[in-house]
Structure formats: structure tokens, C-alpha cells
Image 1 (cartoon, rainbow, N blue to C red):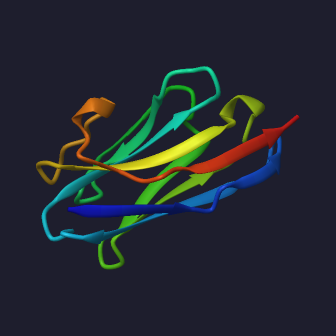
Image 2 (cartoon, helix red, strand yellow):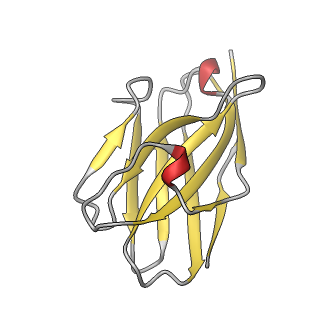
Length: 126
């Protein structure tokens, strides 16, 4: 089992920045891809970004390319999501997720993931 805890959400004005963190604990020795997803009120959960276990591969949703940056520190079992130039449409609950997979893999589909955090609210005001 792997437990995931997100932090760093909050309220920010449009154009501002936030940095989310996701700390993993438990059986983290196996290689896990780490992804971020989000769900806005009344909408389905959507993929945001994923990073491979070795950190060498990333995959971003088109809506966040050039604004969001994912990174990870395996020594700290933590993945980060730096969000810049935030827009009101980025408002959502952000979830991190982990999938046991090959070290270079970057899965995008939510159903592929094994573990999920409880989510952290990000609100961007206009």
C-alpha cells in the first residue's frame, strides 16, 4: 500500500502561482509513475501531468503546457507541481496518484492508477 498526501493548495489571483506537493509513504520502493489530475465542480476528472519514476519523462495536458511544471524527489518520496500563470479555469480539486509501472512509463489514464491522495483545493480568482 502507498499513501499519498497533497498539500499546497489555496486561493490565488489569476496570473499568480502555487506549488503543490504530494508526499508518498508506505511501500514506495517499487518504481511508481506519479500523476496529477484535477476535477472542477460539475466536471469529470481530467489528466493534468505525469512524471516517470526516473524523472526522465513527463507528459502534460495541452491546457497546462508551458505553465505547469512537474518534478519529483525520490529521496524524499515527494512529487511537486509548480503552477504558474494560473487562470480561473484551473480552479479544481487537484489529486496526485501513483501507478506501479516501468521506470520510464508515463500513463495518462486515471483508471490505470493504483493509489490516490485525498485532494487539495486550488481556487483561482479573476
